[in-house]
Length: 334
Image (cartoon, rainbow, N blue to C red; front, side, top):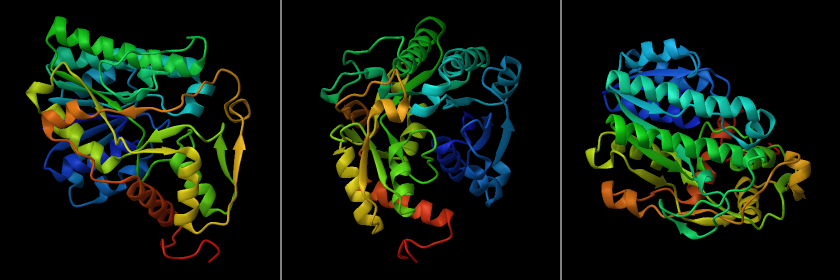
């Protein structure tokens, strides 16, 4: 496989890069480094398989650059997108342009050059549907498009619609996945991701800020489970034209998540609650829960999460200890 990964310097993209080159594939990364980091690719670029990976800094909205790069590969993993609640809240217009126009640009190039295509979408498309075990055909319950959170959900849903139409009308070999809160090493809390943000606060001895009541629940899938499934799906003919949930159905409230992090880090930090308005500003809505049904993915490729929530928490803790040069068995005070 000669693969292009848009957004390949990001959290998930860099792990996918590592996975593909370890399998013997060649990878080119396209990333504008707006949220991705070159350091995420250091293992890939500097490791024994470094000759099989290259990095190009640029935007998916640059049609000429995208066309040039897609022409050199047979497979495109499209991960590049504006991500994170803080990014969507503060840069709504730019986020919509990247998520809509950028995806269409990459889709068009993939069709023109006959490349296989995988779109990473999001559980956000389900909106405020709180059913336990959301399946891929579940109804979408979306709030006002004038609220920035739902503008992101609408943009990603349109990405799926574009991709589906390229399959149906133009014969593009494309697969879509909806990721449910993927977590693990290299993930940053700067853009609103709750697990690394709370871990960082606990390790620093700062109050863990839980937004809203903290009774809202989430499910967290480990990147080590997600990435191999992406690589398998794009090579699975029966997956073409379909959309798949990918995540871990284990639920946890944000209050309990914070308590587990405190226990595992040995932190003396308190938990404090902030109203959504104070945390995000106006235009934010939350939902009670979002739990995936991954049976479609299991039935096709045998997907079963192997990492528990505790595994994911510990992986993020170890990663953040490594970033400051400490080992996980050292005390925070030490």
